[in-house]
Amino acid sequence: MKRSIKITAGPVELYGVLHASATADAIWNALPLSSTAQTWGDEIYFDVPVRAGLDDTARDVVNKGDLGYWPSGPAFCIFFGPTPMSRGEEIRPASAVNVFGAITGDLSVLKGVNSGSAVLVEKAPG
Image (cartoon, rainbow, N blue to C red):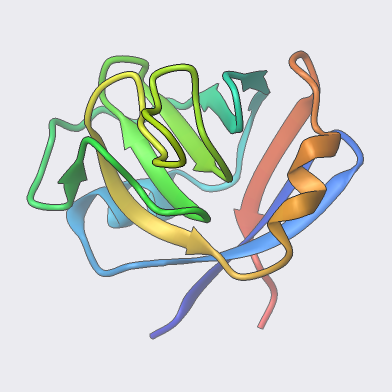
């Protein structure tokens, strides 16, 4: 079953899909989630009421468009470019994240999200 999500962050609306993993299951089961966006380079992250440790999807370097769960937050992270920890063009979280999904649309709209913006993540219709 494809698990699609809708993310509304400030003026931005985009969609993603969750992978098959325990972290993705925990996020899916916690939806809808509302929080306040923070930015860190080309990463948006926000607190979530999900608790999990690192799993076999954990990565120190992620891909553009990845959705990550950061256990230290705990936070939901959307990666769309380099962070202050990146070396060159790589995308490096502050520390390892579980990669539990990916954005399916245009990532450039994420530049329009500011720290302090309201965020809502919900199950996408259909």
